[in-house]
Length: 190
Image (cartoon, rainbow, N blue to C red; front, side, top):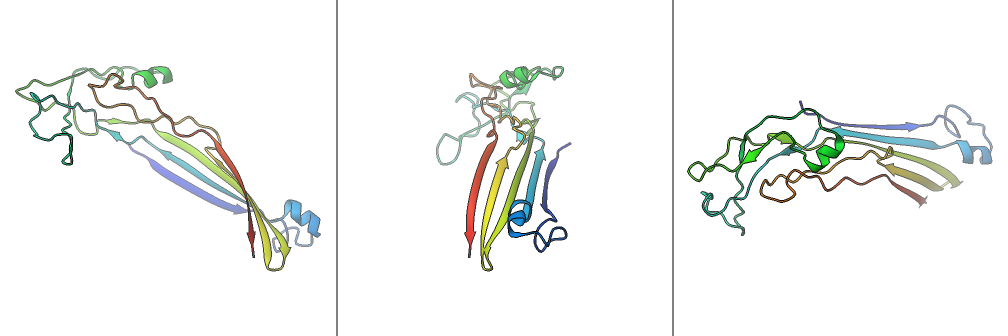
């Protein structure tokens, strides 16, 4: 089963001038507790489909494609064993296709038995959060303070494993999505 969920939420705190609570706050109190807004985006999805493939030698290539503007021939290998029990994270990073063995098909039958999009890359989960506040300087002039936290919980999301069976790093994951990133901004609106 595949999942793709993006949920966003915007919430203005009900405190401060022109809000439900604290509309009679003085200027300094309103500057501290009034006018805050929170934004949140949660992203979660199962991994993208993966094709395990090999680049055939001239003897195996029946497409006639070369590595030029027409593209390069990618063919699927044979898969000879089933999945292994659940892997640890370290095992997954170094051998994503653990428990599966792949072989090149024969020259007489160059198309392997492995289906298209037979695997999925690791899933992705991330929570982004922002808090901002408006300061009224004059009736037509406002200052906005904004703080943004991308990957707020610092969740490690692994990249896509190498899917070419003929590569020396086949099945290895050597990348991750960015770790937590924080930025602050001030914007003058007039």
